[in-house]
Each structure stands twice: as C-alpha cells, then as structure tokens.
Length: 296
Image 1 (cartoon, rainbow, N blue to C red):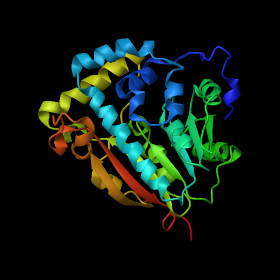
Image 2: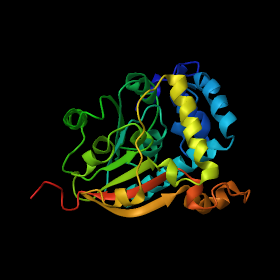
Image 3: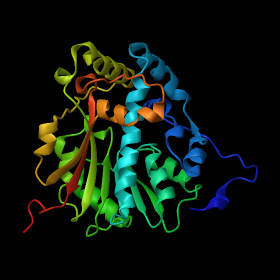
Image 4: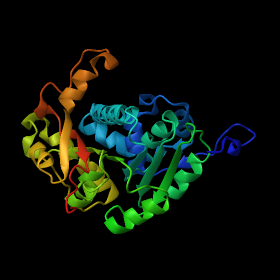
C-alpha cells in the first residue's frame, strides 16, 4: 500500500459509513486490535450514523458490546494462530464490510494475501485501505460481489489473485445470520487441502436460557426495524456444524468459554456468561478440503 497518499496536512479524509456497519464498530472498538494500520483506519471512519441504533440496542441490554468484543477477539486470536503456523498465506473474508480484521492480518503477517468481499462499500473501503501500510509482501483486496453467487464469487476471487490450489483461511463472521446454509458454509467445503474455516453462527433462541432469550430477539428486532430488513435469520446447532459434509471440527467456542479464557484481559472478574445457555452465538474452527466432497 502507498503511504505517500496521505495529505500534506497529515489529516486523512473521513468516510461516513452505514448505520449497521457503524454499530458493530462502536460495539467492538479498534482497541481490540494491535496494529498501527487499524488505528489509522479507525481515524478515517465517521461512526455517527450508528449512534441512534446503538442507543436503541443498549436500551435492550447495556452489556451487548461484550458479545461483539468477545466474538471479534476470539476470531482474531484464532486467525492469528492459524496464520502463525505458516502453511496458509491467503485469507478470504466474505461480508467483510468495514471490518478491521483484514487490515489487522495484512499488517501483521508478511507475504499474506487478504481478500474481502461485500455487496457494497468496497470501493470506498479500497480508497481508505490504499493509504495504509501493510506487512512486507502482503496485500488487501476489497472486492464488490455477491457472496451467494458461488460461481461468480470464485471467478471474482481468482481474478484478484486468489489461488484455488493453495490452502485458504476463510472467516465467516456475522454473515451466516442472513444467508442460506450453502452460501454461509457449504460453498467453502471444497477448498484446497489444508484450508481452514472460522465459522460464527447464531444459536436457536430455544437453546438460550429463558432469562436471556429475549435479548438477541429484541436487539435483532431493533436492527431489523431500523433498517427495514424483512428477511429470515438462519440458526445452527453445534451438531449440525459437526455433521456438515466436507469439514472436520477442530475447535469450538461458546461465549461462556471465550469469556472465561479472556478473564485476565477484562480484569474485573465479573462474568456475564456463566454457562453455555447464557450466550447466543458460537464459533467453530473447521478444517476444509480433507477428502474434497464431490471430488475423486
């Protein structure tokens, strides 16, 4: 990336982003990441459109930011662990939006190609990313496309330099709520041997403890009403993820487990998710490409 595109004043242009994108970034905060590139990128974003929606969601449950922060910390930690192994040098993040994770990975791992895809906003993000410095030999491509067009998505990725025959780390975060099962997970089953998928998903409300069940339902209700979203959400159970053809489950996280592992990070000792049923999202780390489905 070209550092020389920063204006002589030293101040970077600010990009206003959509209400839902801003909401997620207001919940998580850039401080959960470590790179200077993320700090610089965060300074380019105007999150003001998300503040009304944030207030509505906090009126339902003031601690909701922990759900997003725990989710993002867990996924970032897993991605870094996988990439530190050295055998994967390309990352695909469908539905990336204005997420900071791709920037974090491209700036911390040398020789890494990161491909972000979303249906809109990628041209604007590309303009911001071009002003950032990444690690030696690394790149971050912001691509506009439909993640539910499976053939078109592969074509788009290949045209940007993604290598079908090389192992890939795919990160599916938040996206699975809104997509069919094949688009969310199934289309990643036939990646090259050694590929990995970090897959985050919603648990059916009926499996959440009764005293917590209304929190995700009401928060998502506020978001849907605010954005006039009328689609249906998709839910997964652990056993369904485990039995998905073409994948081997390597690791698995609940909000209770993530919070327990991050206890020293928060330092307060206050537990919000004391048992598995207190949470409504889970994260699976899957090996893909082992005995590729439909291939000899």
